[in-house]
Length: 298
Image 1: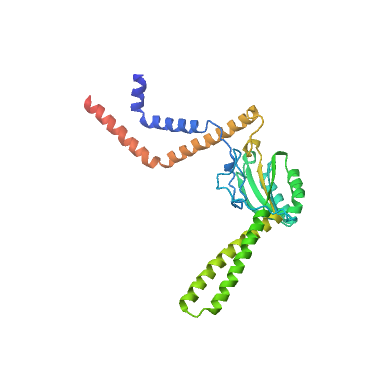
Image 2: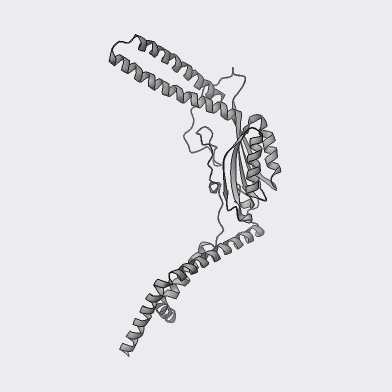
């Protein structure tokens, strides 16, 4: 033990480099854990369209309940679908999905690709909107692009009650606005005019907000949203595999981890080489002082 401590004291720089390499090795020993959050979802977030978590409801505040409208025959239903696809090439599949969505009369909302240059580790996602009547046709085409469909989810939300409630509130506000406009036409004092105008501005803001919400509900019901997760490795996709322990997958992860570690070690060596103009002279001075002290004591 004393010999080891003595060697460390004499070779501090070497010990530091060894510790640095060991830290890098242990840091990359365990394979990464892939979660849904690794896919940067730049989706059209709306407090009425956010999905529930797998543990229950969303953590956002619950939405108010709207009075049912059974008399309405043409219901407004917002449909959303999520696919997890194992594919050969992520970038090409993304491009094909976007082009097909445009052919159906839809559009691409947003997309993302990670490590497109590394075929074995490439992953990404794309969100598109297509007309609701083309939803099933679009899903069939997207499935055909996959080597295997890993998971699929289709959900629908009836927003008719909310739409009717918004429409009723909008009607009330428009009537109130009309009354204030009549008052404004009859007002003669400056103070009365200013107060009525202030109320009209406030009413107009509420009307614009409700019209925007109404328009959003209409468009969301007309254009279904599809989010497709893509990867060349099944474990990268946001789902829980039926057999989580698979030797071939573990071997693949170990190889990737080894390559990453070798790259980091190489990076450290390059940095040490560049900074040798600093640490080599310092090391030389330290070595010279150590020899001078030994000669002096002897």
